[in-house]
Every structure is written in structure tokens, then in C-alpha cells.
Image (cartoon, rainbow, N blue to C red):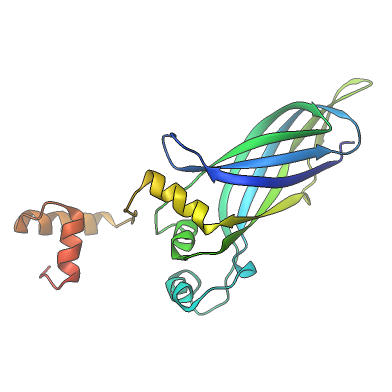
Length: 205
């Protein structure tokens, strides 16, 4: 039976991709001495929000996400990767797509932080393919295997500045978008950003 341990050794922005993503570098060790034929890996990434402190500005920004209650874990992503055969240890990259939609819990949480780290739990599952005396052997990755990583907020900021310099995304109801378009048209306002600025300044709807 395979004896696996996982660690996350680095996370960095993925550059020159079609959409923003973080590249998670995993280190996998097989401790029984067996050579694995392949590993079909699944990784659930969860933000453990209670494992860091928040200053007053961050606490206020997170009120809409957590309400008056304590911080609760937030699901960030679930990704998969096929790891080629190895013996002893292997490094593998996981590409994790990211959103900057402020209506999505993870995007809202990330954008509310000013500095420090984002505490992540990586929970592993999947299928191990081994080569035994009677041919191919298949077993499941134990559900208890996990790793932790403290993602610097600066890494997240670097990713967002790379793909969305100076901007943010906000999901709106279709009727709101239509009303905003009418407001722009009636007042010859060139952009949605300028229209919202006008409304915030007290412009008549």
C-alpha cells in the first residue's frame, strides 16, 4: 500500500494565461519505497478564515460576508491533476483558476484583506495506480491527507494587478444593468464606471 504525504511549497501567479490563476507547487513523498505507476489527484482548497486576525478596516469590509458571527471556512477551489509515475518523491503543479467577482465569497474575502496571509487547507483525494506482483493495483488516496499553506496577500494582489490593473468585477442583476444603460444613454455618459460615479455623487436616477 502506498504511503503518501503532501506539502505545498510555493504559490505564484500564473502569467500569460487566458484567465487569472494561481500555480500551486506540491511536493509529494511516497514513503513505503514502492514505485507508483500514476496518481489521479484531486485537491479541494479551503480558506480557513479563523486562522488569522483582522484589523478594524478588514473586519468592517468582511461584515457583508460573515455578518455579526465569527469567520467560517470558505470553499476556494477544487482542481485535479494526473501525476506521472514516480518513486520516492515528485513535484507537481496545480493550476487554480481565480475569480475577482466581488459577489463570490472567495473574491470578496481576498479583496477585503490589506496585508498578512490567507490561511489555506489543501485536502487531497484521488486514485493511486501501483505496480504489484500481479500487475496493476488500484487504491484510493486516504481522505485524511492534507497540507496547509499561508498565502501572502501580496501574492493575490500581484495576480489581480497582473490581469485587472486598477479595476474590479461586480456581478449585477440584468435589470440593474439595463437601468444603468438607460441612465448612461439619457445623459450621454460614456462609461458604466462614470455613470456609477455620477449616481454615487447624487445624480438623479
